[in-house]
Amino acid sequence: MSEDLKTIKELAEELGFIKQTIQYHVKFLPTKNRLKNSSGAIVLNLEEQRFIKNRLTKNRPNNDQKSTKKTTKNRLKKDKEISINNVLLEQLKTKDEQIKSLVEAQKQTQNLLDQQQRLALQDKKLLDEYKSEINDLKALKMPTQDTKVEQVSSKQPQEVESVAEEPKKAPRKWWGLWRK
Image 1 (tube, rainbow, N blue to C red):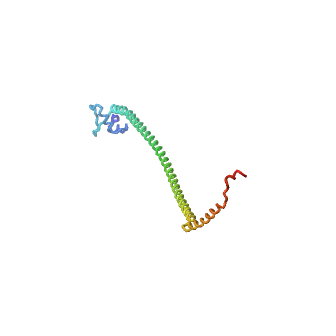
Image 2: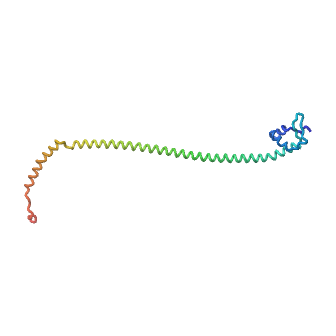
Image 3: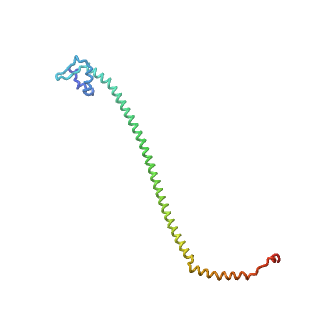
């Protein structure tokens, strides 16, 4: 008969529960025939052990269902978080690619701007060179005051000669134009 009796601790170890869980279910047992061993610990007979086992196995499926629901919820939550993270990672990758292309476009624009500025500077230098050449040529062609006087004095005898030559030509009479 002593083999049929077990303490709360022994039953808890056998069923794989903690001692407090077994004590909680012992409260529902009638207290009038409560047995205690020599050290004062409560001992349970076979009938009481079966009652507690039945209560624990009844609750266990609920616990299993609850834990299954919790794990399913947790799994769904994790899957959702993972999918959101994947979407965000894809967005980050596309943003990185966009940034790279924008940086490349900015570099090209900067190169074109530098090239344009260099060409504008070259054009300005060439224009300045051409202006200085034109000024040099104008300086060579422009007569000074002394040369202007000489040119005027040399033109006057030519004009006098041309004026003198004009009267030498005999004027033709107009009425003789129809005869020939």
